[in-house]
Amino acid sequence: MGSTRCEAAGCGRFVAAGRGYCSRHEQEHDLERVANDVLAARPVANGPPGVSERAEIFEQRLADRNYRALFDARVIQVMTDAAEHLEEHGLGDEIGALRFVLARLLAEEEDLSRLAGNVSRVVSVAVAAAKAQRAINGEVAQGLVDAFTHILLEVNGDA
Image (cartoon, rainbow, N blue to C red):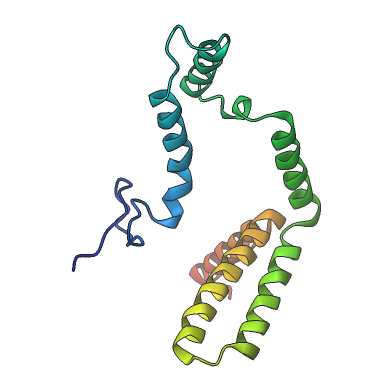
């Protein structure tokens, strides 16, 4: 039984059965799949009034990579609100939710093999969120500056 690899160029990660892309690349290709489906179902010239014009506008926005124009005002508002919340509050809520999930998992899961796999997944996401939070706060850059300063002091013999 062969394992399936991600179809994204140069990826090579394993994918779930029946999937073409790994979780990292699947979202990138969702929009492409939707666009291809829309283009394949493109209305004929004598279809209902206005449908072919809307399809042409959609195609032009895709060709121009004007993805924001593909969404209606409500979706744009939700995305804008989420971005503002992230900017103001960071990922604290999300990290807290991951800690809560981890605590419940540790308290409730009795199957050790499932526990190990699920803890690994939750911790991996929590670490990624914490790294993202540090990047948002600018702590990563300061950490690099501190590391380079320490290295330079060691090289100069001042440390």
